Amino acid sequence: MLSFFLYTTMTVFIIVCLFMILLVLIQKGRGGGLASAFGGAGGNTAFGSKTGDVLTWATSVVFGVFLVLAITLNLLANNYHNKRMGLVTPMITNTQGVPTGNTAPVLPPTTVPTTPQP
Image 1 (cartoon, rainbow, N blue to C red):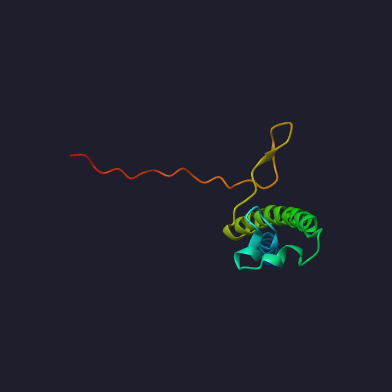
Image 2 (image 1 turned 90 degrees about the vertical axis):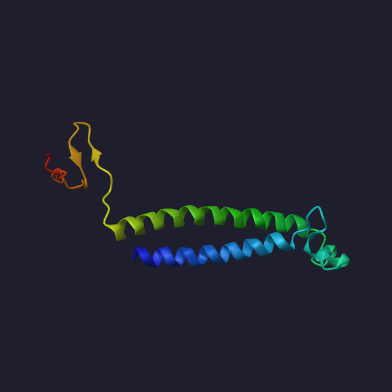
C-alpha cells in the first residue's frame, strides 16, 4: 500500500514539474519571453492583455502544489526505505524513562580476535 502511494505521488510530481516548466516558458520575461526568441514579436497579445497576471497566479499555485508534493514524496520515500531495510522507529520514552514502542534489539558485544604475541 505504501509503494502505491509512493509511485502515485511520484507520477503526479513529475506531471506537476512538467506543467510548471511549461508555465514558466510561456511567461513574458524581461527579455521578451519565449515568443520573441523565435521571432514572434506579436506574441505579447496572443492570449489577451491580462495573461501575465493569470500566468503569475497559476505559477504560484503550481509551485505551492509542487512544494507540498515534494515534501510528501520525501516522507513517503523515507518510510518506504525504512520499511524495506527493516529499520525500526526511534525509541520513545515516557515520563518515567521506561522505553515504549518499537526498540532495537540488544546485540551481544563482539570481541576482536587477537593474534598471539611471541
